[in-house]
Length: 272
Image (cartoon, rainbow, N blue to C red; front, side, top):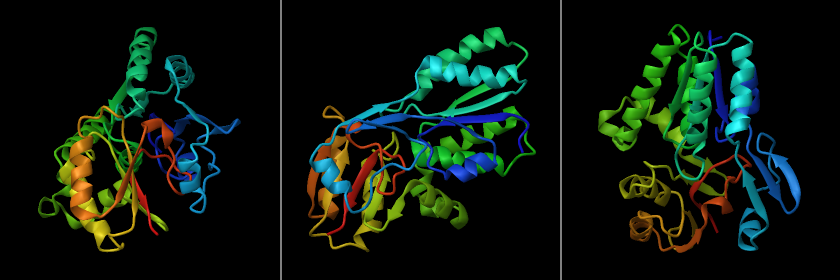
């Protein structure tokens, strides 16, 4: 058990039992789907059988992420109970919990000057946060500041595209990173599209892997990105270089859920 409280949000992808066992506080996203309210810590009512139908008929999705007051309330509860805080949020894609968290942390640092509050912008989406938390728990002998520096060094390696350079990687580390960034499901792949995975080089690498296991002539590819995303043309060009695909662009908030009910924003396809 760490000597500080780890806090993140629903964009992480770990199993609930894992976070409960390790006393990690998850600040939830919320969703309204066809008039029904869900906490995104619950398993969402989407399955491999109906996910494509749900997307194409454009069911009513409303996704609500925690705001400044939600975040501050959770942080302050732990501070009042005497805990130091290690907070992990992302600024990638439409999540951007980090900006609101930064405001809350600056205010709380004035109120609780004797407490250590470290907020880290993971700069990755769901899978990356999950990976970082697991790495933190492997190094519980480190102090809070040592842990924060450790996380920042991992982020730097990922940001430097270390993740897709096999020759520069220890095989075990490469496998761990791939496992946490690229999710292979029964019906296909999800490639999270963060600041780093929106790079055409990273997408090309994953498509080469995908091409070994699918018929490249028949997939639909759903590209989740804003209409004005500057990298969209490069991503589409990269997809077309590897797959004869029907590319369907969705607005980012049209899909925050992957094929198993976990949360993700990214590029995925459904195998025919």
